Length: 75
Length: 138
Image 1: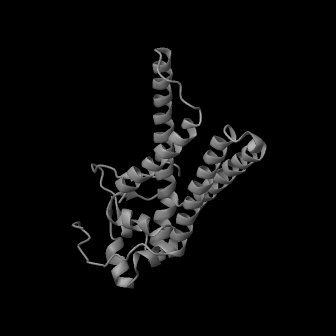
Image 2 (image 1 turned 60 degrees about the vertical axis):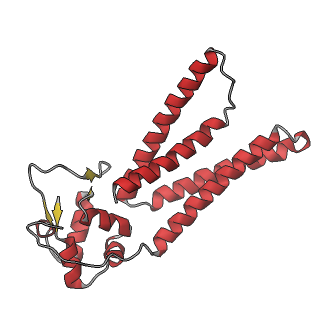
């Protein structure tokens, strides 16, 4: 899943740790999402999008034929 | 990051926040409690006059280890829970295979091993699993 997280963070001048604190996850989780190593759950994706005042589609882009990153199966 | 969204360079700060420090301390306390429990139960069989207090200490240590583990799991976010789940699966499967192999070898005359090795092996495999799966998500 592609993401605009890094760009949006740069616009807001937020560090990964600041965004992580905003949405209540570890900094490593934001890093993994930015690097495409982890696909967030739907609630977390909404939280992140809302932190930037955007819709989920403006932050994340899912492509039909892409190889999925490891996802959260618990949610 | 190349994508339709373009590329921006944002420095990635070193991992430093209070939540992470608290998790590290909880993990350290878990290892210490588990170690204390294993040492106490090992000594209980050798120092007979202190057998009862040592057994009590080992049970208390195991209880504390479980509490610290639960506290650690509760403080995890969704990615960390996923890592823990994978690490626990790895430890469970590894221990099952190892204990079956040892049981089979003992049937062939292999030197018997203490049951204390099982929880220790589970903790070691869980730790290895945590490292492996954390690395995978990095």
